[in-house]
Length: 165
Image 1 (cartoon, rainbow, N blue to C red):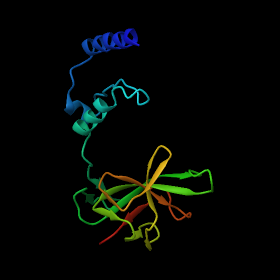
Image 2: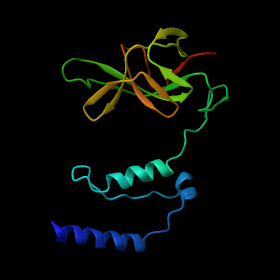
Image 3: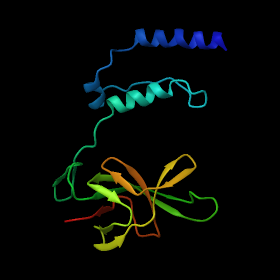
């Protein structure tokens, strides 16, 4: 509908005029929140959002351990942080998925890691990524990536997995 599109453009121009100028430093400091207009269903504004996200999203930051050691995303040794556990994601059977953010190094499916809380070694063979209802096996992930690990009850929110030293 042309009139709805024209009205949306006019309203966006009003918002553009009334808003503050974009300041990437303010965004990174949490002082500015950008607002995007669009619809994935109508494929309107999606590419603009993705381009802005790629251009302005922050790089992964270093994280501090309990021993107050900074872990940089550029460290070569793998580390990952469990931040969410979700049950029953697959309606066909009961399951638990632990969501892990790769903090440093690289994740490789089948790698040996240590669960820091229990000091138990384990091999991670079932790793996935999610996009809506679609799941894909993840073979490789780097700092900043989020992957799902099948959880048989071993993980807790806040757990750290490490490889290497």
